Amino acid sequence: MENKTWWKESVVYQIYPRSFKDTNGDGIGDLKGITEKLDYLKDLGVDVIWLSPVYQSPNDDNGYDISNYREIMAEFGTMGDWEELLSHIHNRGMKLMMDLVVNHSSDEHEWFQKSRESKDNPYRDYYIWRHARDGKEPNNWESIFSGSAWQYDDQTEEYYLHLFSKKQPDLNWENPKVREEVYDLMTFWLEKGIDGFRMDVINMISKVPGLPDGELREGKKYVSGAPFYMNGPRIHEFLQEMNQQVLSKYDIMTVGEMPGVDTIEAQAYTGADRNELNMVFQFEHMDLDSGPNEKWDVRPFKLQDLKQTFTKWQKGLEGTGWNSLYLNNHDQPRMVSRFADDGEYRVESAKMLATFLHMLQGTPYIYQGEELGMTNVQFESIDEYKDIETLNMFKEKVEAGVDPERVMQSIYAKGRDNARTPMQWDESENAGFTTGTPWLSVNPNYSEINAANQIGDPNSVFHYYKRLIELRKQHEIIVYGSYDLLLPDHPTIYSYTRTLVDEKVLVVLNFAKEYSLFTLPKDCSYKTQELLISNYDVDQNDSIKEIELKPYEARVYRLTT
Ligand code: GLC
Ligand code: CA
Image (cartoon, rainbow, N blue to C red):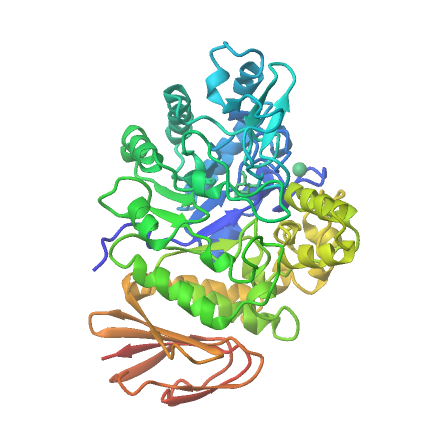
């Protein structure tokens, strides 16, 4: 049996503040807007709110480039607004998890401003500076946002490392002073009473000394240096130090965003005896619809791969770590467009995918609008897009001669702005998100897909999420039961069980537009059956030995054994 804790039993809701709710008509979501919508979140039933960054930032990467870790971004409001938000969250019995972005800061942070002034100033070593190699960049690493990961700075005639945009210089974690600064700012927020941190690309903070070249691929000037900065040599030491100096002093929840992590590494990050983090965001299922080298090389995902990946993670962390469960967030396309059907069966699909995720072992994360079945967007012109990753990639590809129309297709499938279009509150202009001009256009489907429509409709996606969250509170097995895959080779059905003592939960999901026939494996015996949830009307007492599943049908049964 797993150790019990509140963060295993919680459901988290992610807010991307810029796109959630605007209260002053400037077209940008704000803290007051979040406070205004807390009753909506309470009604949904979530326990924890993860707030994407709200710190002072020049917004090169929408707040993931922080220029002051102890101030609130003026566009979002004031520290007073933030404190009010926190107390309203706590008053409703919910918790607040803040985003922690400390692999890099903004180049407008005071530390970097000083660091770039001279080679011998006390802040120089807060960042990663190197001199040129043969008149060029210090190594061949590519920025995750395109181009070289190095930026030349005239002032001191050296380059600094930026794994993301050139306005996001990487902090030098080898420097103990940097680590002290980070622990201090974490303590600052914890003392204000927050309940946890989501840690941005936290497995990239330890770089292999010497920063070796990545293996060049044909036709490429720069390549990923990931093997030399993901899960680097001192990462566990740094996290244990952070845990000892900060995290262990509070009853909080932590989740580390970790691209390129496997289950063995994840055990080391999240094992109860490791004193590092509670859970990680892994990315394997986010890569199933990409070619080998980049996410923009879009291909259809295969259900077999999805089964394999999730089964590996479910079994891999059973009793040895803890999973976070997500199918989308502010960096990923909308799940219903990506893994199911955002057309004819949008409602059924959204419910089916939600069933899939919420019945797994781990802590589920809902990304704003997911609970309404919000979909991807297709803006006609690249000028309507705002995301730096998307814009840099478009420019680079088009300059290299790729047909812009083709690039747009990959943006439609994978671009981050799919997730960032404003939250669809109602059918009034701009979806009730703002009375002004939204910073990013709303998805034109808001008149059909919006919260106001769904709150009163017991058959809505919203109500289905409420029910899923309730079930998790009612049945311990949904939190703690162990996972087993059924029908591993079935081409269209994903089915699994959860088991706790003499109880089982049976999950049956049709991942296809076509009808699929489910046959219960012979060795799956049971005494009684109880239908817990389904996305079509079904007779409670239908035999479960054979089920003819409708398009994207989902059913969950509780069995006694
Ligand atoms: C993480 C964030 C993403 C951001 C990047 C750089 O992946 O989720 O939004 O662009 O880190 O901070
Ligand atoms: Ca605003």
